[in-house]
Length: 321
Image 1 (tube, rainbow, N blue to C red):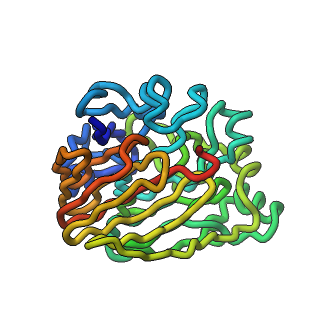
Image 2: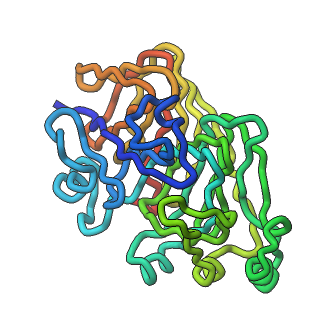
């Protein structure tokens, strides 16, 4: 029987985290400063396992290597390419930047990190840091060296439903009061540029900055990419294509009733971000609550949805195939 791979997330404490992952998504957080739920991951820093069916107990990374047919994977030596998180920015995250594939491979032995943010919730007045104002490298380096953050950093107000594409090289940070679903390359390489001079209560020290690397990989000038959103309908499902990018595609499913879908990618990653949904595959129905995440592998070529729910889905782009 073909079946979805339903997953158990891993939770990560962060200096900037809070309790929204428990309060809103009913996840079993380890502390009052929990910042991230890695809901779909093959990365060693956030091992996610299957909780149902034939592959129960297996990690996504194990299946990627041992059962490549589930993903139409032609290269078992490479890592599972995608990662999906839910982030609770109770406080501002550090302002940071991620490298591209070449720099990350040379300096960290990992993939680069292009990502995207779908804003799940935002408190009044919430914003993000997205890009910078420097027009050339010399101006950027000088602003970093002198700590001229008020002039360098661009702030953007946000609300629930906003979407941002964040390619490698983009200076960025989530601001306080923002809950976000992040679809990204499977990488954990981060170069911290500014951390608001805060002290980590666990160490009594400020966190390390990575200014030399950050200067090398930050894109100057900053030119935001604004993908065109395309909306379509299947049955009672509204499908919004938020981005089709080299590493991943992000699509929002808003269900108000019933819909049947066919596969359009080798595999699909999905997370229920609101409501509840019944997913039927090969005659078996799976009831999925808010925060449930699953993979529709390559042998699942059609499925049926019923309920009132919003799901965020990610499929591999051409550079992740």
